[in-house]
Image (cartoon, rainbow, N blue to C red; front, side, top):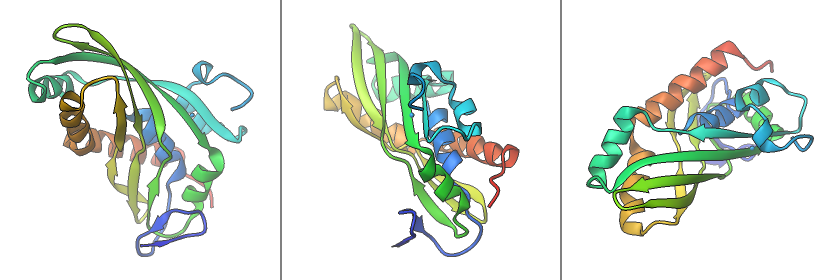
Length: 191
């Protein structure tokens, strides 16, 4: 794949919209110098174009169905998780992606997530990153992945199946696409 001037991968030709959607993807799954990130609403940050950095925190939670699947793949070792993602992304990256006229893949920078995970025996603090990737064709998000990586705080034997499931879950990917495309329709980017 060739890279465009904004650093994003290009896939063929056609209208391109991405930036806000990557932040929407970041905010959906599960980062202004003028205010602390934890005081900022992520969706408001996406809409408000005044700050050079989109910075906020976003609680990450699994649906009951996703939690049931995670419990199953960990043989009921992982019981629940309460997480907070810190989003910090330069608005320029988002705006560049939104204004590029070609079909493309947008890769968001890794965003840290801190969780308290309840296992069958205790609660554990864990950390990981989400670095969503979204592919756009004809101005529509057609595929997405949360890009979970860099898990610390739990043994690999527990983190690997969860990381693999999160990155390949059809329900998570579908929900990302629904949120991104709804956001793009509601708040179209002017070229």
